Image (cartoon, rainbow, N blue to C red; front, side, top):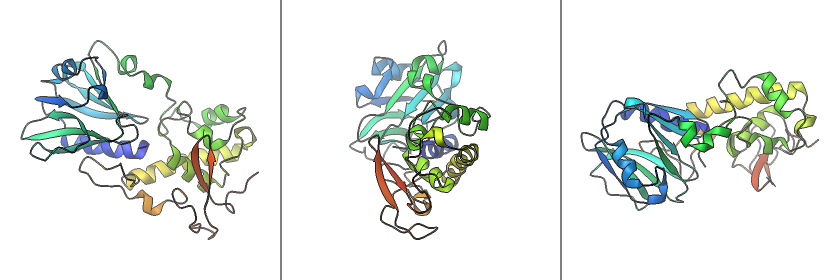
Length: 279
């Protein structure tokens, strides 16, 4: 599933190619992709004639600010892709929504697993009132709200493994499996460590490394995996420099110990048994 750096990579790309161009029409090829309004026809009718002022991101959600105070919300979920291309390009079999723009261009939403969703938010409503998933998100990791005090206070009394806590979107928005593993490695913290046992210095370092790995991955245009690419269809480069994620069985980049993997709450956790000793 795309995480914050992958979604941010898409946002940056969309801001380069889609702004100030009128949406001239479109096509919904899978009705359930449209989460709001209930009618795909109404979704397209509401969008037609509007232009995109700018793309924003909150956690793993993309929000297009539209003319006249309207909004378009997008959640890529597991396999969603937003691709900017010529209308003449043959349709991919997993194309779910097409939005048509001038000069024969279009924005295609392609989604193999069909969990992705789009929302139209009219000018008299807020995105949070329509896109209910936004209501429970924690602070953005690059915001002032994601402070040392906030992070320590949230973790202090929780009796759960730190890896599980980092995947909780109410703690911090946008961090998922990949970057939780990476931040824990850089902090020397085993993924099974209980939140309540972390020292203040552990928490401080972990917060810093969450921000670090997210920035590093954005700079590398995200992690390449089978379903992620930017708006031009290009994969990211972070996977080639990952410390532990996806490297089980390979040697640790620091100590050469074989990277291990365990299951926590149904998710894989990658770690170095030497650099991240279990408490």
